[in-house]
Length: 258
Image (tube, rainbow, N blue to C red):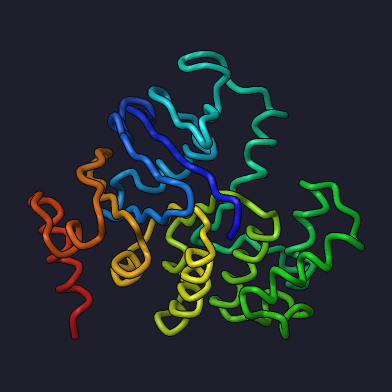
């Protein structure tokens, strides 16, 4: 069982100029639990995810990981010093829609580079841990391959390996399968399911309703910057009371029916 973090989000707000992207969002994620964020495009899901590790600065409310305030020295106070922010981020892994791999490096080098830069590990230490992470995501035979020689699904699995090699206590996924061809989605979701089974705390922005239904402990629906509802998957995906959720799911099923 991995060491896992808790996340507490209280009355979080975010503005981009006059536009309010997040409107007093409240959400809790317990250690070793998986929370999927769903909702229409532009609803604030990715913005909330980026606020959790302070890639976006939130304007009001509090975000705490294991009780530690994220991004600020005190609620409403000055920003956390850069050194403290870097230390906090070391326990958070993040995987984006796009893989952001270095094209001139092999899969092994891509994973080891972060360990050397962020953890200060020597190459002789970093590469065995990188190899272990690549084996974990099923890419033990692709360590010497450059990104251009890998499929999209394999590149995303390298990105996941890069994140888990840092031994995070929390994993954030921002639509990790949205840039993939449909036939490659399953291999990435399988890796994510395995991480969930190991007890990793995960917050996942996704349009994959099947993944949310079968892997999430909680599903949170967002619309226009508001967190409309957060509950067990059965209640959100199969028995939604809010008409906005009903309409979103109706449109989703129409678009994905054959």
